Image (tube, rainbow, N blue to C red):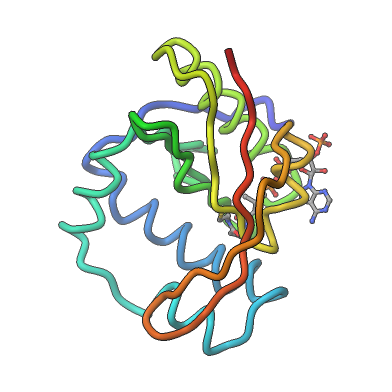
Amino acid sequence: MTDDMVIRPYEATDADGTWQVFHAAVHGTASRDYTREQVEAWSPPTVDEAAWHRRRSAAHTYVACLDGAVVGFSDFTDDGLLDMLFVHPRVGGRGVARALVTRILREATAAGLPRLHVHASLTARPAFERLGFTVDATRLAEIRGQQLQNFDMSTVIA
Ligand SMILES: CC(C)(COP(=O)(O)OP(=O)(O)OC[C@H]1O[C@@H](n2cnc3c(N)ncnc32)[C@H](O)[C@@H]1OP(=O)(O)O)[C@@H](O)C(=O)NCCC(=O)NCCS
């Protein structure tokens, strides 16, 4: 675990940093488990930053920062979906996801949610299992014409 990491709520100025992390995580880490066509559909080369910011703001989003730069982010919605968990590949395997999910679980518990669900990628499934989630079902998600295998996982938090 990284001592100088800060986990804080998402701000409007984090839109570009969080998208950069998302894009790098999909193309740099998840490309181990998905084809080039699938990762290109999942994260195309450009984004509508205003729409991206609206989606991050619509959930309870938290960012992980190292030396002032966003290196990861996660979120949860009011109906108990942990929708996003992305860590930049250059800091992978150093506990950033664990720190983010620990904060998300704490905030979701404080919000009175009994359970959190996630649609976990093939890449993220082992990390979610280490973080206490179990697989409820396998599923195929359709993104921009590509089908990506992932897993419905959940954890009881209260
Ligand atoms: C999945 C992801 C978020 C993990 O981020 P990370 O910061 O590297 O994860 P951490 O270092 O915090 O690891 C958390 C725990 O999971 C374990 N873990 C992570 N990846 C693992 C793997 N592939 N196999 C086994 N264990 C794994 C770690 O050992 C750690 O366990 P511990 O804390 O008990 O020692 C990151 O790889 C990523 O962004 N992947 C691509 C994007 C993606 O698929 N996101 C999810 C969409 S649902």
